[in-house]
Each structure stands twice: as structure tokens, then as C-alpha cells.
Image 1 (cartoon, rainbow, N blue to C red):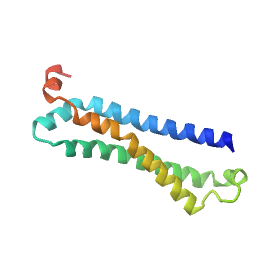
Image 2 (spheres, rainbow, N blue to C red):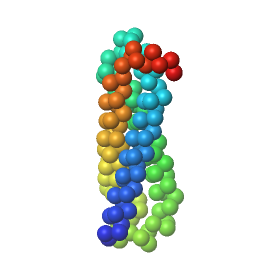
Image 3 (tube, rainbow, N blue to C red):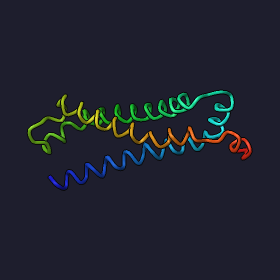
Image 4 (cartoon, one colour):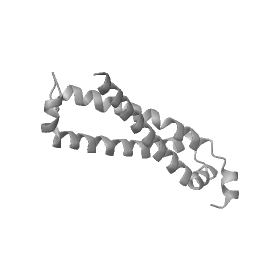
Length: 127
């Protein structure tokens, strides 16, 4: 049981790190666009919303792929589970909710960073 908990924690950590890395890179690549949006009058809420929507799409795709993989691999998972089935609705909803919450937390830093971009400095860089 301890080994399973350690591997589950490692998987969640890697998922958070992956979502954070992808969103961080997306904000970095689009910093000029964000700067232009802010110069044109975009407020911090719209910038955060733009970054958050990218993260929500990423999390949604990951959850759909994960649910599909769970359904495909349900037969081989049956022998590893005790007291629940691989397609137990309550367990799947709990996993989906926890992974979505962790993914949303991983979006906070890139969203915050996007609002701190100095439009004048970005324009001077000439990326």
C-alpha cells in the first residue's frame, strides 16, 4: 500500500509539473502577444482568463484520454483492485475532481506571471 501511495504521489507531481511547464512555456512564447493585448487595453482578468482557458483545455484533454485509457485497460486492472471495480463511478469522479483541482492549482503561477508582463519591455525586445 505504501508503494502504491508513493507511486500515486509521484504521478500527481509529474502531472502538475507537466501542466505547469506547458503553460509556462506558452506564456513565455506568447509574451509579445500578451504585451500587445495589455497595451491595447486588456485588463489582468482577461489575460488570466486567456491563460486559464489554455490550461482548462489541456486538463480536459488529459482527463478524456485518461478516462478512455481506463476503459480500455479495465480488464487488466481488475486483478490489481480490491473492493472497487476499475469503472466505479464514485472512484472515477473522485480521481477526476482531484486531478482537475491539482491542474487548476498548477495554472496559478503562469497566470500570475502573465499579468506581470511589462508591455514596454516586451516591445523593446523585438522578439
